[in-house]
Length: 494
Image (tube, rainbow, N blue to C red; front, side, top):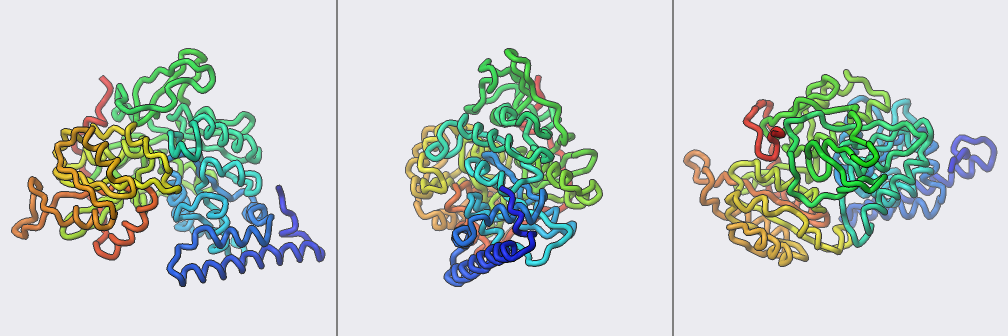
């Protein structure tokens, strides 16, 4: 609904404006109390604000007048939204964003409470990652100018149910965006393609990188069948999961030509290098899935009016941020921290581990709290067998369901020693201090160089990162560009 009272005259308009700002002030007081108490304050301030002002989010939509970006989908929401916010900030925009990933209604409202400026700026925007089941609840109030759909995979089945239901929820939300708004959808994903609305402006992004296609997928794939006619899909190749060059022989629908597209993707030291609309891009992450996040962010900021020149510098050095293959050094060893929360995400991280030399220890943290998803059976759909010939020396299992993960690793036939330490911090500390028998050591120092990969579900991510920040040293890439031979997971289709 539209809230004209934010700019309306008369006593009623003034009273309603004061209601909004009073709710904002009350939320900020709650936020300060929580932070003094050592809490992150990601939801409660928003709950208070919306309770005092039921039209709170609608007022926000009125304030930003089409300069709202919503990012939804299974994987990549946080990275994409953070890239959009950072690039806008770098160009002088004032940005409100839920950067810590609190993506339900209360988290979005809390971001507004903490960041909204009293005085308007000519260049201002709101950038929110939104849970797939929440986007329909906020789209009419916030009236976004851009909605990004990243991808759809099975995720937290205990909360969402079957994947088709999630797609239907997002499709229904996209059908209600303002007519002039842009729906920016990952066209390489046939499941996301199904959510594209009729009668709205739609643009598809994807990869033009045939050298990265795999002729077959060894993963359990969602979307094996056409979402329109039910016919089995045909693929020329896969990028990951069900994302690839797809076509339906039944109804003739096929993967649309991507715009924007990533081309000339190659391995660079510590990450990937590629081109988007002729602009060179350098990504600090070796995960191919993050190229999609860059494309989505690029398309969103261009839709808001940024020029190629304004994003050129940012594209040359892209950092994926918190818990997204974030690198530290602890006890002389490289530590890589990554969030995993479903089979597709874990599979992509396992590919990164597979391609990375000198990995001696892998820490797998599996929790079953509400924010993680209480059903952990998804670990049996992930391709842990990918690492059985990698030569991992130790697999460390932690979290509330550490024993379940240990059993899964055993069935994946890793020759590694399996150790269970339920406390995630203690587990990472033990892994970082363990000897790396086959790893190369630093010249003369005797300190091990073998890398430790920490793959954790959501509720342990911030705890582990905070501990690594305190105890370790964050690593940064140099600018050297290397082009080694493409790995098995990135070979050309024969």
